[in-house]
Image 1 (spheres, rainbow, N blue to C red):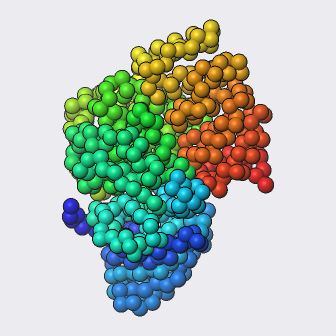
Image 2: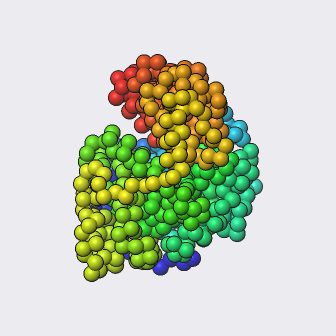
Image 3: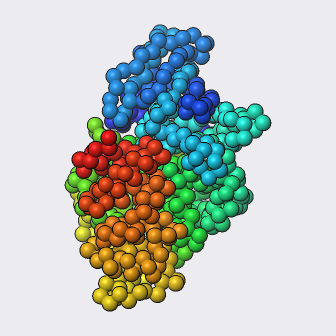
Length: 603
């Protein structure tokens, strides 16, 4: 697919980028990367194609963090003067390049990454299933600057080419089309013709096998995992077709899924053409594939149409969560969608109760804060419920027409919350102002808390699980769970009283062997119950779980709860000290903060 170049100088100032995006546009970059698994570093170069707004502009300003800049030159290989500005917490340092009086169309930077680059996780052979080293990048929100000097703002989109040099026997994949590889020489080439923000430039290297699912979908994984992954994800093509029927043509040609080692900090990352996924989604019964539906939905909301700044993060995640539910309904029925929506609302209420009021607004103000602070269930679930209310108010047919038009109008562009509000009034609301007023969109977007107008999800299956909880708590009656899907297990476990007795917890464990649950979501929910009920017989398995998985969704609540309980406080410290080195820096930062807040020293 060829992309028609559109030059954009950003008018919205991104508070999380040093780059002078309002003066200079970078529309393409060429990467050349050599990996050193002995030093855990990349020796690399990047070349930018520039468009300068006027001749008066004499500097190019880029984002960097923990990079060693070795040289900067122009299109004639003449050196350009440069210096690094003052460091700012979590943002790094601006790289200021003097363009001088001559015309500069290209800038080439030779550089080296730090062994501790926050976006890059280097896994030792002991940390992988294949017993070979592994590397992957995770750049959202503003970590691309730790492995590429760039305009690290979601509003600045680029196309890119890359050449990656890897050790013999390793394979590389990127968020781009495969080019002409030379596997014998360890040289892999990639081309991304569609413009994307730099947080979506992604790389993974290791011993990988590929198994096709359909002509345009497939799975990459370590050899021992690939068959199970392909079986779990066998509905990938059906998901893709369901998404296209709702949202319009898929713009990225292929949708592959890379199953990463367990240290991956997220459930999934929506890198274009190739979703990076946690192995915890492999449950054996396809009950957790809503995560894949979520990442696929990002191919439209987030990747195709992107939030202009991280203050507008809900535009990425609220739309995506809403679409995920629609995909799951199309493939697995209304009951499944209702259960997912119900659990999401429960998460929303739980998280909203723990946040400062200003952080429960959809439109955030993250100036002088790490944008990672805004990546909560507010953006995901409050955003999705806002869109669900719009759908129910205007009717699904009308809202679906709007959705398709929205993605067509803004494809390959970025959007602010205010631009969305203007667009929906023109293309959906039109002359139906009274309906729009009943929604009170500004209340949803700019005010704190959960509006009373949220449409409460109802699930008959969950009503039955509530009855099962009551019977178990009162009479130790074990539920008939043979046909339960994961969502029913989660509802049952999450609904148990927080003061459940140790005896009752033990009866549950003895009957269902929840310590050994192969489904990571169910195991996580059980361990939360075990901690609260002081079921110490489960603590060894809890520690094993924490050492095995680096997914922040699991780590943060478990460590946070353990630190509040005298019975598990020391176990939390002991486990974390053993596990920390195997976690991604994103997870490390979050859990370090928990110990600091709990006044527990890690020395």
